[in-house]
Length: 364
Image 1 (spheres, rainbow, N blue to C red):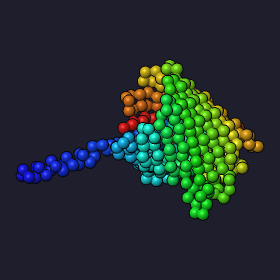
Image 2: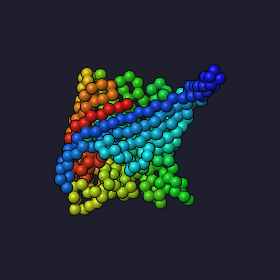
Image 3: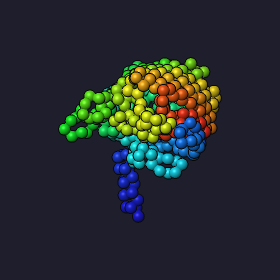
Image 4: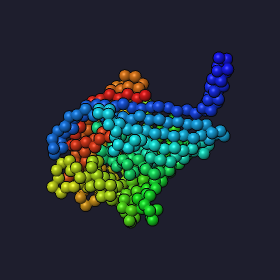
């Protein structure tokens, strides 16, 4: 009996030594709400859906101290629909994010896998709605990457924070045999954040066809200033090239065509702009457990079609605790010259030019 107890104690000691400097965290978001969509050609729609303010997810992340200031890290994040229990991101197991890498406080971090583009993270910073709810800036402003704001087969380097200055550089392999340039993409971002001011410039370049230099190029400058009583959000984007600003929906990855044709245009399928400018102004106003949100976005289509659009949105969050909040939002898009942009949410594209949301979100 004494020998057994001693052996168990020794095993526990060795196990503790092996994993004492390893940390693994399970985290997630569960988000569901009632969504009422209006203005689509097939009629109005009211539904209970998942991922309205933030995509519902289950994630695992961890670090291991390798010594000398170096650490290993990983993250795997699954997206799911809480309303019916199915997987999102096309059923990909870890469709939201999946990467592994090395990092140090002095040298920065290198990660490999499926990751957010630097330009998209710039958009998140600019948007008072954090690309969620009906006011999602991505209704008009483009998500970059080959997987709705993400890059597959990518390697990313993020610098340490140098007195408020940061940077990111990402490269996504096209993986076309015989042509290393085909379907490749790359992006970068530089930013500054200190005190009430935050500024970030993001860029993304993606080869569409794999047979030419027919690239989509997106540049986005964003800034926020926190006045304490309110935070001001500003952004300006330039989008050039085929598929540089596709319409949300069932979209062809090469042409940018929206085959769902939400407004039954006579010239279906409809297309996004290949030359446009985006401008955003927004505000976040916190007041105790209350937060009020508002934004206005203008898309200026510089192509011959001149399919401009603008969106205005209002939102509200009430914090029941640090982890749970209630939210409501309304947004409306004014499409011009047969433009076909729709009001969606964090993970849905929407079916019309107006939408109202009412929901609850819990983080863990």
